[in-house]
Image (cartoon, rainbow, N blue to C red; front, side, top):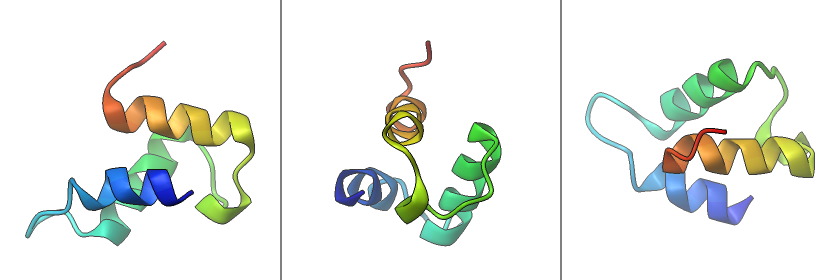
Length: 55
């Protein structure tokens, strides 16, 4: 999860806080749970979304 947090942190701007980015990511993924509760598959999907590698 540290890697996902680092990727999110790089995208923080005045308009997009870390919390807002995480909420948007969870919305895009279709999950309600916190990142610390994600499965390996969900974490992998999050990394793909953040880095722009959609499958």
